[in-house]
Image (tube, rainbow, N blue to C red; front, side):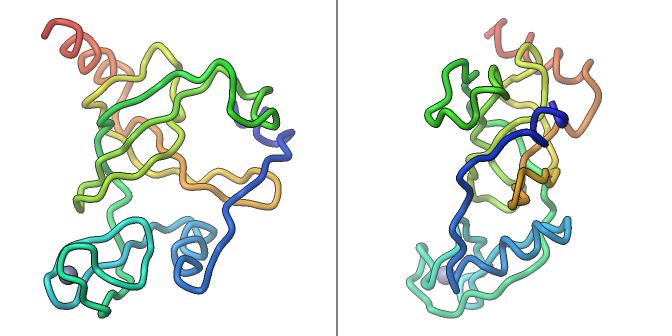
Length: 153
Ligand SMILES: [Zn+2]
């Protein structure tokens, strides 16, 4: 998959003054999230005010970069043609260990995608951008266990 990424020329995120610290951390291979200095809750996506208590005191902190797949979809026909060479691929909602949910790409075989799969952030360079994708945090056996568990319920 990474060979395909090298060939992609895709539209990327537009960083703003508020979101730039997030993207700068990803470029360094790190994962940062905002945390509210008043209510203590973590926030994603980057913003000016806490969505929980409306405080304007949000500060950037190192975050684990770990989470669990909450939902996913296998993309066969990308919404933008620039991603066609990468299809099929997996888009996932990742519930971060800190609480917020983030939409990202899952670096896994489409057959290994599963709700409950433990994942970790893995920065991927695509053209001019470095994007925070996620990969299984454990081996494929764990991925299959999670998938089988989902199917049996
Ligand atoms: Zn707050």
